[in-house]
Length: 310
Image (cartoon, rainbow, N blue to C red; front, side, top):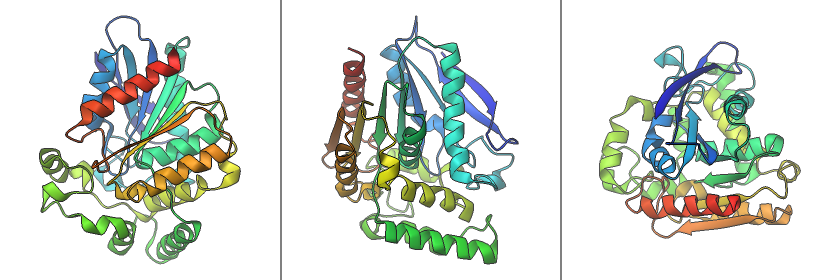
């Protein structure tokens, strides 16, 4: 059974849209889903229904500046006036607290995809204790010098244009390098970096909730988080006994064709995280939960969760 929920964002002014999918009978664990950049939580309905069928309660929300968590569509891509990255992370925790109060005695897992994977990695450095496991999907790793230069450009542009400004230049810089082998316009839905299912991509590119341009404020939240999670001191705050699954497609430009994902894995191993697995899917692109062979990914994630509860 699916129900809509709302809660007040950590920004103090925006009502956050959330969903909860309850299985038949008593749930055996909670799986909280954290979606990516320029999308919304209902895009995970198929995966959530699968998890429901396995006996899991599923919750997730639209981030600030996404989907229905806005006061108007002009706010798409704008996060918050103060500390936008922290606002996103605090809202993840708000939903966890609300859900845990209703279901205090069952294991709690969080899965983050894409931008949501970076936010989850940041979240784990502060709120990792008490989680039964974390599933990090479609993540990556960028050199600090590259991210710092991007942040400098975002901040200097914001000084001139304001934080609500939408910069096509900054957008193109963020979707450069390994993205260039793919069609970024939607003109060729068979060659999208997002996933290789053309029907999903046609729907994606016809959906205004997936095609708006991030504001400078949104890029500030994203890039500051990408920088944060790459710092050794922040990685060291993640509980070393926390079970973690890193998973990605080897044709995903966000993870630099799996190189960035493997780098995160090595960082975590060096930090002493002992229960960690890395699963790379050959031929899959960014949204492994939407690829034609998504049933294999679903089953692998379910099996990993079940193993942590055994």
